[in-house]
Image 1 (cartoon, rainbow, N blue to C red):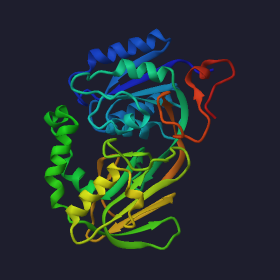
Image 2: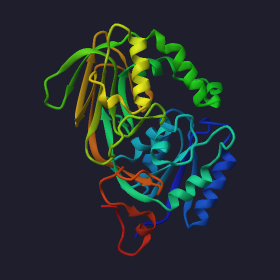
Image 3: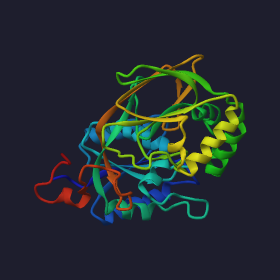
Length: 334
């Protein structure tokens, strides 16, 4: 039978304000429910990955990741292919995956909804989630891509602490400032063993989730997180890239992009992208260098704590209640 021992990893610079006292309150809440939670603030880039690996190596049952999508990515890299469960506490400015799971995100008026999110996780279920794996040896949870989003992320990140405090509005303002300078890319995409596709593109998105654009848009309305497949979206370019991109954004907002003949959806296990000239790439909205880029799916590689609020059909495998893992005879999620 598993023990109720875990680590709370938090980014002290994510989202709004200082976190030390808030994190103590979160740990106290979990302690009230019988958990021994160790607080671990991150001190540098990729420190969250190291802390997560140490927690998994120590046999801890749970790692809570308090931060934005970047912190979540780092923790997932430390927990991939282990039995330690990842729970998300949204405190960053992106929080796309928190919106995917319908966890309450922070805002300027209620920045610390972590106690509410913790209560939801305590009543949640454990599911296995697919991960993307890049040629540079990094895992990712949500998406990888190049084109307009890679261009914007290359220019916007890293953001100053001021812009992080402003939140999503600050991110959107900087994105709109740089976006008119994007003219599209000439790229070749090889998907599994299919013939390569070469064309002009405005956006190439390799998706492992349903939402897009910080959780503002639904790209894959029927996406499943444990089916062993990416959804590869190809948005083709043309003579008026800015206008066409605005049209695509509008169509995605209306969930009508699936009817556009210049938008293709291909499901895949492995994707390689090359571009001339090389173009900026991102994974989980973090800069990841230039093309060429190769990624492949690692099916059900992450143990994820999912709140009861998560959309129906997000997983195809049956859930295991977190509480059931501490009943006699239930020692793993296998």
